[in-house]
Image (cartoon, rainbow over all chains, first blue to last red; front, side, top):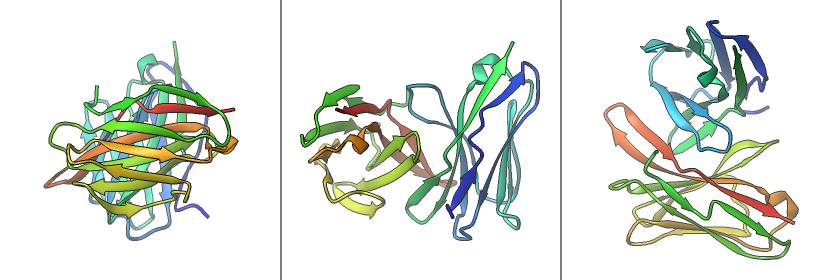
Length: 109
Length: 114
């Protein structure tokens, strides 16, 4: 079993939809939780960074962490075609960052 | 633009060969991380250097090695290349604030082993 599980998709939604992306994890040592966005043929870029359980909002993006369930989510409101990318969750305990395999999102006009 | 640079952007080579990938971290960042990204394995952590010293090792093969130089740039050496080594190789540098450590990724080097 992988330490971090993420549905690879692809996920296709219409423009303006609310998108929900999720990851589950098994390692209780993970303390920091991140979401990265990766456009095709580019490096991942950090979107959201959270430490504690609860919600964190940044513009159209909301990151949610539930440590008791070992479950994290990223919500994208009013999705745009420019949001089409692969979204990777990442978690850190100690020095090592562990990534999910990424969910491919396509927002269609 | 993350501020992390990687060269070359693309590399095509043959099995059994050796290649060197180069990374320059963001100005002021002391940590450099190397990752391998393939379609079936996702993003895999290889190794971390901090201010010239190896700090953490991940799923790095013995055929692979890395180093970080006094000017903080880093090189990843891949030898006895196999077809399965074809992948995107990313370098990241990091900054630590009160909220923890944030990694910034370079654009990657796409390696194709034929």
